[in-house]
Image (cartoon, rainbow, N blue to C red; front, side, top):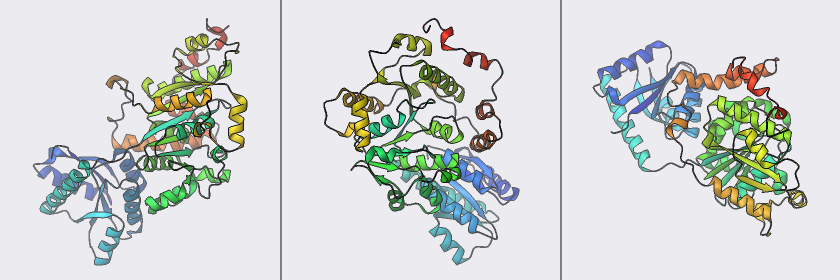
Length: 440
């Protein structure tokens, strides 16, 4: 076995963890086996498994196995490549059968027997080797975002998903005000809320039923029709949904709201590429500058972010070069201003990118799709350093989303809770456009 095996462990206290570690230390192959997460909390282990994707997860089953069986079903649905190993003190045939139905592949009797553990490790290695030989689908996630409303984010997201011309899922993460269905003239029966509520029993057929077909290659995961339902969508659930979609589609396009809330940042973290949309005006330019500063604090590499100028017009009083000088970035992707054509396409529920019209906007949308289809080469120095995060840090990162989301309603700055930034960083953000030499 060339690759090390990684394990997450759900314990019933410290005994299982200690026994498992001692057994691994006694095994001469310990250097190829690593424990990446340990907890007695099912939510924390689930979050760690979703983020770490370990080779296997050891789930210790107590006297009331219903909660751990539900955890098995969740992991099997979202991370089918992770081998589930149930550790039981007193195993009955009924419990073993129910565990198998819930996705378990191996069993360990407690207290742990060294020879039995070696056998389970060998079987896990064989299963992982077989899975690595068959390449697993991992679609590309493109997030379309602007921290200023009115820049045409939904228009670009909808048309980009069409123009990609490949199996794609379009996710409307404007959870309270979403309206991507209008761009396609459809009426979704289900939304992201249904997928989240049924996450413990998801399979390919059920997932497909929650998405609304827009064409033979594109499906929409709609926002909830009732804005109150959005309150039940937590950031970690959004991460799960994105992961489920990218395993089944070549592309996942995210239409994001205009705020840096917990759900938005969780989605941006998962994106392979962020299209930061702006228009040729002072307010949009300043919003883009602040967004770039926040991206930097979040640790995103510059290769991950692409500036998209929407509604470009030669009649604008603002010079493009002034905007670029102010942002310190080149804008290489443009969508021309053609108000009547765009509004007509929305009113009839027919995306421009799906039409054969010889329009400049259509050509530019297809050019944007072609650019997003190319995976950029990223230097090691420019990558966000997540590999070095330990399991507790990963779980903590999920918790900070939820905690900061709650604090936002109490008058505490959400971004301040994330960055814990020092007072001097406010100086850069307080700079106005009029203070720059290029924009006076």
